[in-house]
Every structure is written in structure tokens, then in C-alpha cells.
Length: 278
Image 1 (cartoon, rainbow, N blue to C red):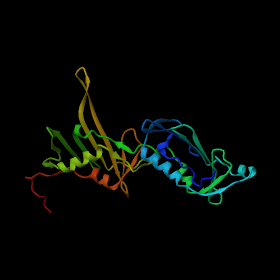
Image 2 (cartoon, rainbow, N blue to C red):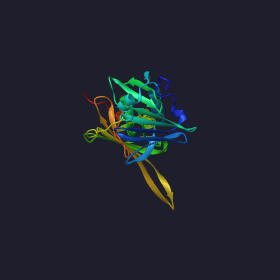
Image 3 (cartoon, helix red, strand yellow):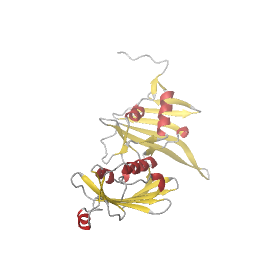
């Protein structure tokens, strides 16, 4: 081990990453241009390509000092007890990193079976203890925006806002006497066509502040039959930003701009309505 960096490999060179730590074994595998993440006892799912790249790049930024310990000293370091990372190359071959527990504020690491040990900053420990949520694709909602025919917003307290689209025009069903804010509707549909989370949350939030339902044109199944399609997202306001929930995904955190967009009203007073009295 001559290099002071933990690894020089980059995500683009890799076909597989295996991480064993106190949290168990996590595996990332590249299939074509996409990454998949799997964990014991859980189904394989899509991983975020950018998150995989960032994780591997960050691994390569850890550098330290070299030591050439004797055999007795090497046995005392507990290499592999903190984590073992195996990086498999697309072109063939692999690199295995064995990391021991923190000692005097540093982490010992050995690459493959080289005799030398690299002492790295203790911050590396947090980088190694990961689960599938760290790599899960952050794309949480994909509503086919041009197929949406009805948008229903239910707010805490019972208030309902309902808009229908017919022949390309949005009209308001509820509240009575209101007009559709076309610009606000377009901004909403642009966002939910590809809504990404900041990160995933382990705990579920309290009762949602609002719920959004997007009803789309029915999908033909053949023999004259059709299947209705709808998409739902529940939003809970937090001290910073908001939490979102959709079917089949863990609760996630959204940024403030997306929270404001989802919470905004898509209706406005109609041209003939009178201003409310103060």
C-alpha cells in the first residue's frame, strides 16, 4: 500500500459494491447504466446513480498516513470489524478494503492483503455505516402530467379544492364561484412529473396537512375495458420543509420550494366575484 488515498476507483469503473458493517450487508450492482441496491430480507430496488457516484467519490477523498506494522500489531487492529468494502471493476478484478475500529481518533484500513496500513480520519466511520435508504432513488413521484384530468386537494380541517380538465381547459368544481389559476396548475404538474426527495426519513410524521390526488385518463386494457389511474401524495408540514408520503415508498423529506408549490392554492376569485369584506 503506497497510495495515501483509500481508493482511486470511481463509480464509472465499477460493476458491483458490497458493504459489510454493523448494519449488515448491503450490495449495489450495476445493470446496464442503472444501479440496483439490495439488503438482506428486502426486495432489490433502483438506486440513485448520483448517490452511488457521490458515495464512491467521497470514499476516494479520504487520505491518511501510512504504517507498516508487524504481524502481531496487525492482528491487534481488528481489520474488518468496523466494515469491509469490496469494489468490483467492470473490466474485471476487485479491490477489498478492510477497516478496523477507531483507535486514538483514527481508523486503520488495509487494501486487499497488502502489509501496510493506512490511518484515516474517524469521520470515515459514518460514511461506511449505510443502509439502502442512503442509495435509494430519490425520484418519488412521476405523474403523467398531460394525462391528468382531475386534481383534488384535501386540507386538514376539511377544505377541498377540486379542478377538472376538459378539452385542455381547467375549471373549478370546488370551491364554488372560483376560477382556476392556470399558471399554478402548470407549475404543480411540472413538478409532480418528476418529484425528488431530499432524503428519506425513518419515522412517519403526524397526520398530513394536506393530500393531493391526481386522476388520469383511463388506460385501455383491450376488449373495451379500461383501468382507472390515480396518484396520491400526502404532505405534512414540518419545522423545516415538509414530509411526503406516497404508496410503496418510505416517508421522505422535500425542500421548502417543493413544499410551498404543493401547498399553494390552484384557485382564485373569478372575474365577476366581489372582494371579501374586511
